[in-house]
Length: 176
Image (tube, rainbow, N blue to C red; front, side, top):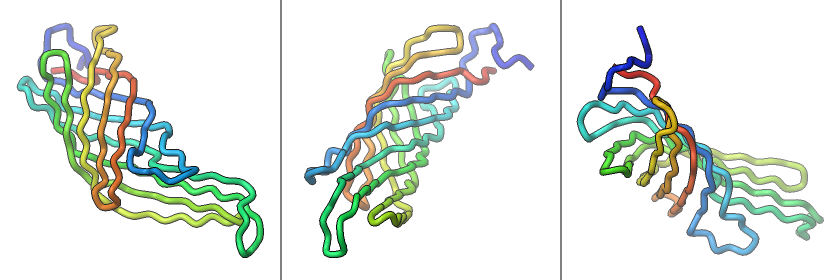
């Protein structure tokens, strides 16, 4: 079985991997770093009609607070706090002209980590996420594309709105 048949097939399974910068637009607290690296991946089923479906997941930093020599009632310490999310989203896609539009909803695994006095406390919680994005893909080889994407991710339970700007690759894994 040839994974890349020479015919002009219109049904395929694709993989996408992106890396970019995310920004939490809700934080206005002093000393909080609202931007960070974000990694994402998507597997899509692209049939011969307009609506496509797939699974999207990412690793996104929401906020980070780091400060050295903080004076407390228990002494001086270094503080390092982080908040991040791993969404797992059922995503729908339509290609309109040369632009891909994505939208989806799914569970999101939130994590937080607090370090002070050389002790770390972590907590985890399940939430849900709503995602919408717009992407442009440029074909560089028969089954390989460069892509750029602007994504909006909402976490309604904790009132967070995140934007992610990323670049990456798309690969046609299987065609029939």
